[in-house]
Length: 507
Image 1 (cartoon, rainbow, N blue to C red):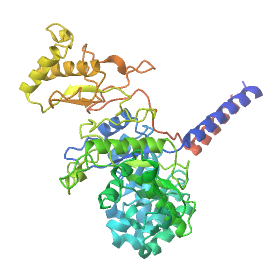
Image 2: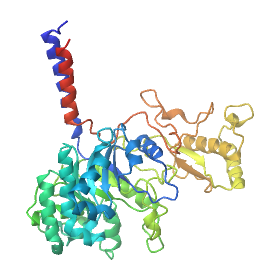
Image 3: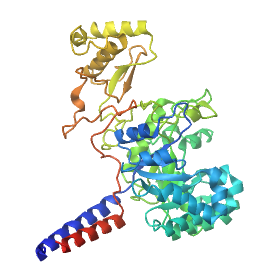
Image 4: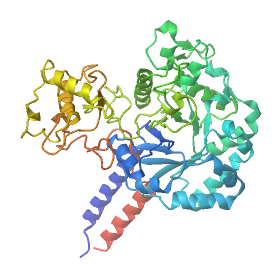
């Protein structure tokens, strides 16, 4: 039986509303993503990595390659993915259109749209780390883009190449900044390509290194986004713009450097930024507290959509460096300690994000637990357990034989229950999860069988906010809120709309 005209119109309106809603939510402003390096002695498998990403509500990631296992594991996750042409493949891709086409076919087309690939980073710091590839870098960008055009994906997937902020000379005041002129023959056609294809400048910004190399000229608080008195703010004498942090100054230096070359409408996306949590003796400010401060403040700064002094209100989406500590990486200790998590998915520190909304589950606004360290000395654990059940005034009756938390009957398991109870009794006060170094905070719920730990992790939708992910020591998530999420492509929605109309006309 034919559908009535009113029914068709009603469903058409609903479909259009669906399209409109998705278009609006796709442009919600700045997002915070995470880089995923793989130099770990025991790299989690792709399924475990994706489980951690989901549990932490991380909706945007950057891969340093296009690993098939990762791309398959990311399928239907909704996570937006930036894949990369590794530096060692730049020469091949930049010298052969067919090589670039094969790369796109195998690493993008074969996985899209199930895996939501939104950008391709052609190399990383190519102009500084692989200068012999400079002459063919723009060709590599163009060849990759041509392959996307041939597959009708050029509107969905942007192409660019991450640049080191060290290419910008005289970065302060920002209005004096300009790119290294010896690279103009590469940068001018590159920026022209980015402008023509409506792509963005990928920039790696490291206030940590700017601070370390400043010989005391840059204040630590200025590098860490900490509040400054007005007389300590840096003022650009040419524009009279006030800068309260190194990050904004570096981004604006890039904008001014581009305008020096007559490019004024290429946006900036920061592909790497972070702070190490540990360093050698000559890196005294590579500390857990500073790393926590920098990344927490960075996330709040980005998600507030404040932009920069030169471009207030214009989003500067940023990828944090990085997801895991890369213990197998060569170089100083700091090189191994930029991660938010260790290889088991345990947070290196708990980010201070209260007031910035639901961002990472690795957050003081979400549920955390206090557990016994795996490497703790058994005698010290027993002493800490005795204290918690005695002077610490923890009700340890659930640990008695026949009670819910008796099994497993180990000091570590019993200590975890006592430690966590004490941790929550004290309102998770600073220092309440230490017990002379045998305890640590985690986002993994230690509950098991009928032994249920703190139940305040139950979300408003009635499901647990943190559940142990399969095969990984991380938390799970009942929702995907937090990082702005771009839904299906407009092309897919239009296809859906056409399908709906066809079905209606056939009724």
